[in-house]
Image (cartoon, rainbow, N blue to C red; front, side, top):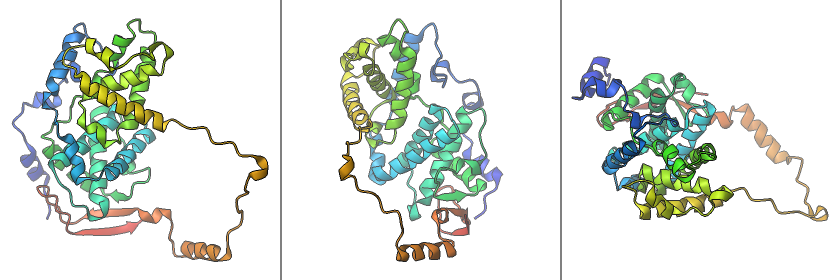
Length: 335
């Protein structure tokens, strides 16, 4: 079923004022991590108040999507973000769109390619929101992408994502709070740059964990600032109870739970020293390949079977943006 651009636009028009979509973004929702304002206390309080629209049962997304499957696609988004040197907020927004879409809409599994298409579309939308230079859609499909999609199909998926999200791409994120919370811990500003930078690393390293879907952005921001501050000897005594005086509206019980979970993951992810091996007990690896294994390898190479054959260029012949009907799919070529 073919869809004209006029039909897409007519279906996706909303009743909001165009200035609310394409106009200036309010300062408290700015993606600038270093932004400050004279009434920063009031701005932060307003952000926390706006979080009342946060979906408390966001974790129900994993009832449809297995946490390990979600972690796989989120990990791919992080890889592409690093590959293209995108801002950390771009990766966060990509995952946010991914989770919000699946919370409201169900995709057919079909060997996993609909989720890959959704990942590319969410990353493309986030890049358009935050990056000055956005690479072509084909160049986004790197770092081990299982399928390669035609740009026109990614654009159709983008329109579906926009419709499901009600065109609300500007969202409150933990990055809106990091500088404010860091200055609450280090009023002198001596270590705020390190604390904020370390907090960003923790957010991106934990974003694959589905358990954090239960926590609001302000809660995640407070917990990551606490974890980052604990890496410094001067602030190793800081706990979740200290966040009670930062600003009103923070839920200390939630911050404490998120903080404990985050500390556990951070400790588990820290590199461990390899065990020492005595030289006289060391086992040398086998340097030669068996004849049978070598022949099998040559046969695979002769047939053109290799790691790159896992990629497929997908063409969607029948597409219904209402129900995302992927009933007819053809493989154009192998890469």
